[in-house]
Length: 136
Image (cartoon, rainbow, N blue to C red; front, side):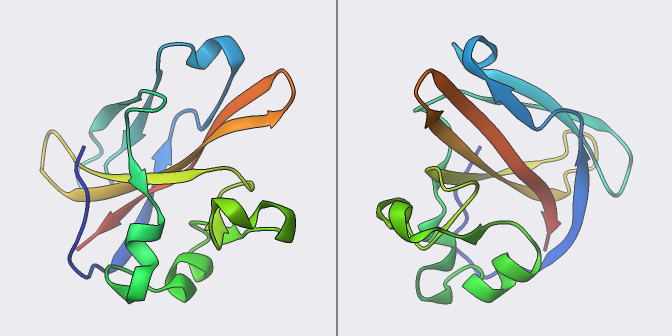
């Protein structure tokens, strides 16, 4: 997992085996697989709550990596509702939203994963992977 600081172009969205986890499924971590768009290799990612990822704001701040419009057009995130703006202008399901870069372990194509994590309602903590996108 790494942060991305240079301008990128979104190419394709990869298939993710499981994108929603709740309560006990995420007590220690959430693991899933994505399929590489280039070579078809199944790559495993593991998200550890409060340890994995970087704030999504780093991606669209001053259009440094991607613009807010690019994120919205590719359905990576959505606009945050007014009552949850303290999480930022763009989120996944109005929850704290994070991202990280990763590579295909077979062909080394570059990808970034966007996910949200938090308490959706009392007693329901969720981790929702918005998706994993190939970029250059």
